[in-house]
Length: 209
Ligand code: URA
Image (tube, rainbow, N blue to C red; front, side, top):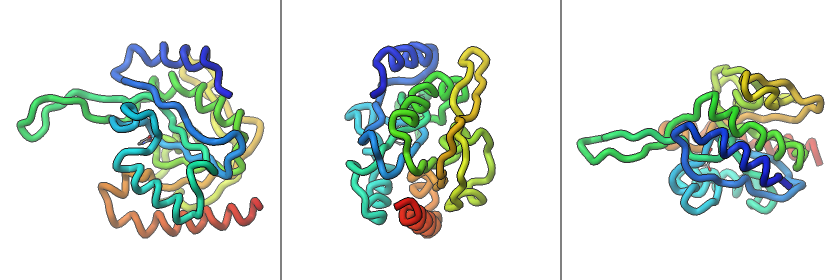
């Protein structure tokens, strides 16, 4: 289980940034797979359920395709609060919009993901999108080159928060990157690829059984 002290410390570290709310990762201690997203959005910080907004509809379809339910998997993200920016769009009143978390925000919450990985020891980790990929693997390749390709690799854990440095786990994990479900909202054409990547994930399950 995650310690509340650790969570409090991470919440304190993210305080200076424009981030709101806190959504816990969800799932059993022995999940079939751990999915890692970017950061919750408005819907999630209001109801506390990861991937329950628009991107979550796609995520639920992925689970259905995989023959899994939320009880079988662990779902979390690089940052557990919602990074926002105030913006005026289309002549309307200024309001908060989601934005991509920055490196400081990712480092502020990194110990949470580190602890979740330790606690669940997932047989497969699926980073969804480039932020989760960078958080876990430390580089930013083109997503079309790495999605759907399983790799056995160590993953990054925070080393020094002040210096924003990471080290790599001693253990290796089967990691299969896919596109973030929200990417499909903006580029419908990615959907065919996503299902091919999910087929690769099914093969990986079969290998791990
Ligand atoms: N994107 C994420 O990474 N997590 C959520 O919970 C929702 C959208």
